[in-house]
Image 1 (cartoon, helix red, strand yellow):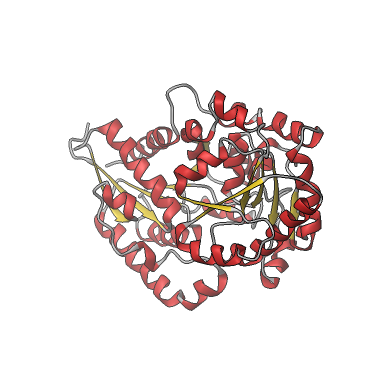
Image 2: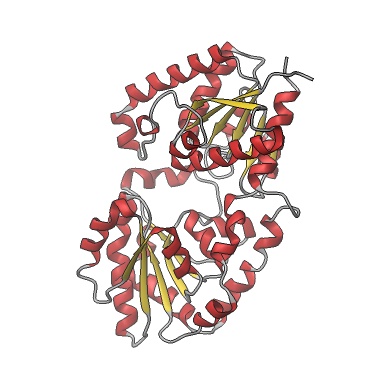
Amino acid sequence: MIGRPLHVALVVGEHSGDQLGFKLMRALRERLGQDGVRFSGVAGDAMQAEGMASLFPLADIAVMGILPVLARLPGIIRRVHETVDAVVAAEPDVLVIIDSPDFTHAVAKRVRKQAPDLPIVDYVSPSVWAWRPGRARAMTRCVDHVLALLPFEPDAHARLGGPPCTYVGHPLIERLDELRPSASESMLRGAQPPLLLVLPGSRRSEIGRLLEPFGQALGLLAGQGLSFEAVLPAVSHLEAEIRAGVAGWSVAPRIVLGETEKYAAFRTARAALAASGTVTLELALSGVPMVVAYRVSKLEEQLKHFIHAPSIVLPNLILGRNAIPELIQAQSAPSNLAAALGPLLGDGDARTSQLAEFGRLDGLMTLPSGETPSRRAADIVIRTAGSHRR
């Protein structure tokens, strides 16, 4: 038994990875004791609040979109090399890269060349099942184990020749109490007028493309005589833009801020109109039938020929069938959105069939009693480090 603390190098590239990272740090301390583990690497605010110093601010590399990344590419490349040098010099027992594969995989590849005996764990599988499947086999050269958030991903890696992969659970399954309604809240889902969630995305590009057609779709529903209360959960940094964008809507939505208000609306909502993203899984776990839309730029649209996934909607992928309508690009015209959304406000087959499918999610996603994603991830990190530890 080695007396020194386990040294875990952690590298994240954006806010979502930071959230996974701080929970992993807590779980590792639960397993090994406060003094049984230490951390180094690249951290966000949440991980730093847990006591980990970061090599540099996360904002230096947390860039979304093709053009913004290209504009800051020299600086990002510099940070990649800086991270690699720091990890190799620190001689940790294991390196855990978390999400953001464009950054973290660039780090992992270079670390593997310089420190070939250092085990590397990848927390969050890249979407090899949808985009560039050859990445799975390529990952075997620099990743020893993949921690998957989606239950179908281990089979995908096995099929594509990727590294060993374990489903550790999606972080949302730790938040079911926040997502699911109480008995009284369930009754409110049948209230009149029903509450309709409007979720045009959390990125400026999504808001810019979806806010207008979403507003027009609501106007068409109201014009058909349907009565509803529209609620739009907004991210705080885009609040001003969203308020300006909805000012001309014929149906004025009530805008709410923060996760507490957002999940309170989820627990009483009758239906939702949402952009594709993690929010669709939140809605499905909450039991809110939805219509999903997405629009991308003309440049990004050309990439569709290289995408192999049968759906862009996470619950559809987990369920193995397209239970939720998804309207992409030109299909997301306001008239189409309204036509798909209207029936979900009633009690017909469109609504009941989605709810029946959502009932399957627990069996597909939940972990054995007492396990959480972060604890399961921590156990694999410890085991992987132990198999190589000097």
